[in-house]
Image (cartoon, rainbow, N blue to C red; front, side, top):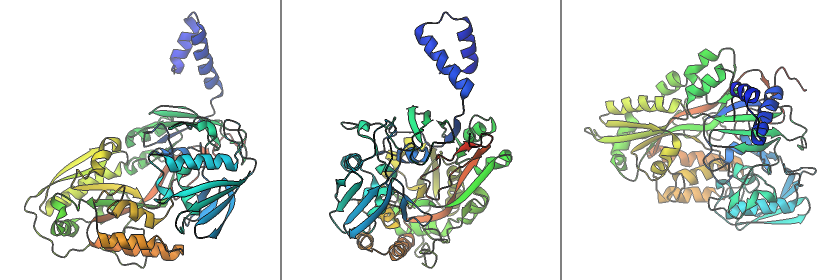
Length: 499
């Protein structure tokens, strides 16, 4: 795209070809009527916005696609594309669709479209984690009713469809194994174009909950936290996620929203190979790692102390469960070498890594810190190539179920097991917890099992993060404790009002 200065020069002096006329006309239109809101997000798209990739959350945050249900502040399902539902038995959910909903390509949201979209999600090579490991079947009862059957009783069947990977897309989204989000979602903004650095979306006038107030969204993906802060200061964007806390003092004329999240910062110790395969070495690390300085000095009040818990002590189902790292059997490591990894997109993580590295050195370890962009680290993280990893992780992703989180992150077959943890007794307890229907009892059981994993020193909880969104001259910013929604039809420039 031509810059504004270059646009003026080229369009004033060049003999305009058809293509240049088109380019100039595009630039001129945007310069004259640009009411798009600029936002910056910390992670670049890695899967062309496919909902079956790590990009799934981008679609719901940017307001370009929607799921059957959303989550309320307690993590329980609430209406979105499905206006109501029933569970006639423990293996069946019946969704009644909202009527009058259109996809961005103009086609109508019907039960057949929902079934088609969900079947693609189930068959995807990287099936959305929220759908679970068991087979689900979908059928259209009538034009606005979808029947879902699980092969096993499933207490969280309905809330599985709050997973951003289950966004409902039009038939035109699918071409064999390929899926596109361009003009195929139902959100207030239609994705128009994108690359790895930016995305453009336009207001969808036929949005079911009313026409959006903003004309569109211009999203830039900036992995460096200081660069995101600079984009705010320079007026390039009006909103940014995950601005470094150290930068907030220079953004005093901006509004800061800090909201507690179901997200922890964890020190994972590799229990399968290397130095920390020895329980005595893990106990030595646990003896010297102190979370207090990280919460107080790095997060500066924008995170909560863990009190030794994997899940926030503020959660009613976690607060009364005892959880702490075991210090028994700690042994002098005598200079054992370890590699500690973290990623740079969340600016506090490398700072935390520096503090933890110093603490581990005092414990007798020789520590090398590796801090890189997440995309360059992921394969090595999942392969267990590091002795320790500092990670930020939302424990109510997917189906918003902490039991499912434990299954994914702390079982022998877990798909995101950064601690390389494999304990058959814990696996059985997690599998048994999957069958608990009462959500309060289910979540409390998850906290109890997590306490045992912490006691085994597979993980050392460091902080419970807050959502940190910084913006200026905007109204209608959505603050979602589950980080799934950010941009809605209510977003508008503060001086634009409802016009």
